[in-house]
Image (tube, rainbow, N blue to C red; front, side, top):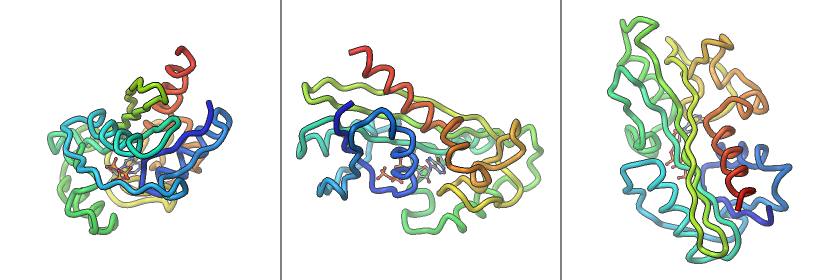
Length: 196
Ligand code: ITT
């Protein structure tokens, strides 16, 4: 793949994207590095719609392959909240310390087997010829009883992966990228683009 401009302002995401796409892309630029600013309202009702909204806003200003990620945390006991509103949950400027503590308190007394949750990631790509593609991937887990781990970003400290006995914030970036929603979705997208 030639140069990819990745339509995100989230530095945690961008760090993971760079590592995951490193060996398959010539150059990976964040919007900031490409000198693009977008102010697109993420008003889609699905992750795919929101990923396309972000990618299209950048594609309107730049040539090349444009990609975007829309992701979120779905907690089954809370009817899949915060879902597509994950970044906006309790307000964009509220710290993840506060958001994570709030979600844990909303699950007070909820037993292990009912604490199921997943991270979802949709990746959108727009090619120079205008073709648009989206893919989606998930990772299943449980909401922990306390925050654990210092790696990752966002809701990672409360997202426990039972098979590993750790939260995604306790994994190294390499370990997380191997199993995460984002790692899987980006590898799926790479395979889709190779077919074209
Ligand atoms: P961009 O739209 O600029 O990419 P954003 O942070 O607003 O950045 P989203 O709208 O896709 O991105 O919101 C996704 C939110 O879901 C993100 O802010 C985190 O709170 C959460 N999230 C997604 N993937 C995550 C991960 O791997 N680890 C922890 N939290 C994650």
